[in-house]
Length: 137
Image (tube, helix red, strand yellow):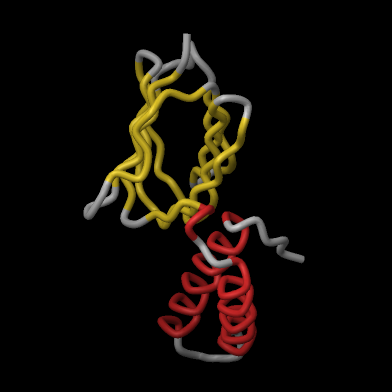
């Protein structure tokens, strides 16, 4: 028996197929979901969701949302998402380096909104790089 996994963003469906396992980037840490999992509703952080289907792991960069698990169905509603295989690794690496520099610079700012925006941009760039297969040091 497999999980039915649906990942839906406002503008498109990112994934709608069966899978053997899902790893969610929840706001409290990584959550592994297998068949028979107890019902669950959780907030998702910006990070990489991983779906295992046909013995292959498919990374998907998520940018916040919610996940519900019930009766071997995993429904993920996100603000935005990108499959790792659609992300250019070199562009993602350059965007991450830029976001990291701005994040480090923002930590000296007294303006809280500047720090928050830089943190969100850093987390988004990091998720995109990781989903593309890039390594974050």
